[in-house]
Length: 154
Image 1 (cartoon, rainbow, N blue to C red):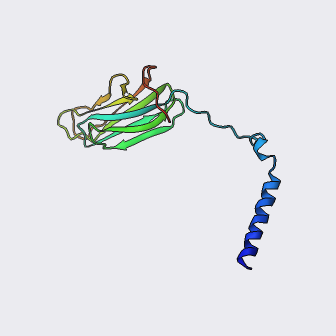
Image 2 (image 1 turned 180 degrees about the vertical axis):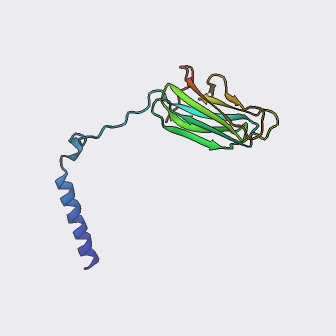
Image 3 (image 1 turned 45 degrees about the vertical axis):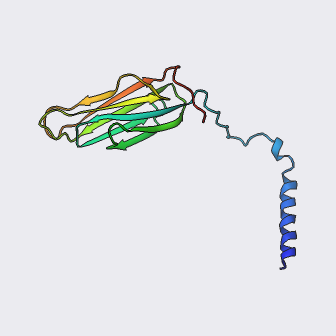
């Protein structure tokens, strides 16, 4: 088949497809399809592991209503602010901090600070192990995002 014939064939198929869909742009959305609305008050959620005396620490951030995990990091660098979500639209957020395998002989502590668009949410989530080697601890904290936290564009 020549190049010109192939081009005419493609043009014919394109015109047929367009003719079959003359009303496509005005038809309602397919059944079962619901467009996702744009977030009303989105914020950036970040978490910082402030302290980790254990051999292993983990921080996690989840939406407490939907259960959607936004972030789970094992052994993040203490003091480093990590972004969990850049377009979070719920009014509460949950942070988890875990401290595992305390070297002892004294107690070990882990703590993490959660922020919404730069605004610190409540006191840090923290836990302290018993003063024995190999001990672990965990803390969960649900924080409410204040209306003063700046809204971001998504």
